[in-house]
Image (cartoon, rainbow over all chains, first blue to last red; front, side, top):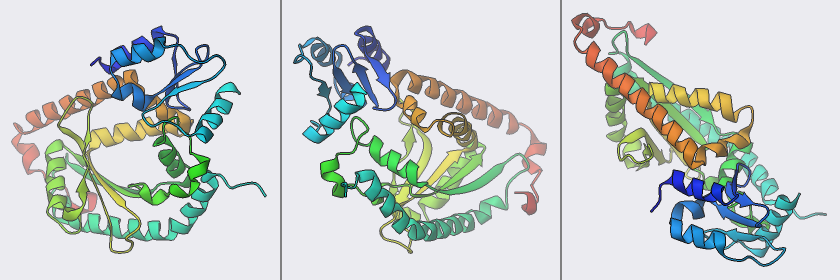
Length: 82
Length: 223
C-alpha cells in the first residue's frame, strides 16, 4: 500500500486536482472523479488501473466506494460542468 | 411548488431539535464542571483547566452530514433518509487541561463517572499513531434520548491550536475545512501535534525538578 502522499503524487501526476468542494480528485479533461474515500481505501495498482482505463466519450466517470445514484451523478455532473 | 431539497428538510429539523440541543448542553456542561471541582481546586499555579461548550450551528451541522456523502452531495431521492440526529456532536463540551498529566487525570475522572462511563469512547488519534491525541466520548444526557452529546478532553495546547486553526481557516471560508482531509495537509497537522507534545513533555520534565513549582497552589478563585 502506498503512503497517502504518494497516492496524491500519482493522481496529481495524472492531471488530477483536489477539490475542496467535492472532497475528491478531479480531472476535467479525462472527466473522472475519485472520491477521497475511494483513494484512501484502494492501493496504487487499483488507482493506476482506474486512471488509465478508457472512459465513455463525453461522460463523467465517478470512482466512489459506493456507486452514486443516477440523481447524484446528474447533480455532480451539473456542478462539474458549471 | 418545487420539491424541497435535503438541505431544506435538514434546516427545518435543526430548528425543531434546537431546544433539546440547548437543554442537553446545559446539563452536560453542569455535569462536567461539577465533576472537575476536586481537581480544579487543587491546581498548581502553572496548571490550567478550561471548559468550553458549544452548539453546532445549523450550516456546520448540514456541512458535517454532507461531508459524509462521497462527492459531498446529498442524494435528493433519499432526502428522507438524512437526519441531523445521526451527528454525534450537536451539543459538545471540551475540557482543556495543562499540562498533560492533568489531561490524563481529568480523563480518568470522567471514565469512572456516571453518565460518562457508559458513553462510547472514540478517541481522536494522530495519523499513524495508536496513542490518543484527544479523548472523546459520545452519549446521551437525561434530557434527551435523541440528541447525542460529545465530551472532548484535550491537552490545552492542542485545543488552542484547533481554535487558531478554526479562526484562521474555517471561519473566513468554511469550504476550506475540507483542505485538512487532503493527505499532504494531514502530514503538516501531524507535525504540529508532535511538536506540541514534545514541548509539553519537556516542560513537565523540567517542572518536576523544581520543588517551588510543586508547592505553589493556585487560589481557587483563579483556577
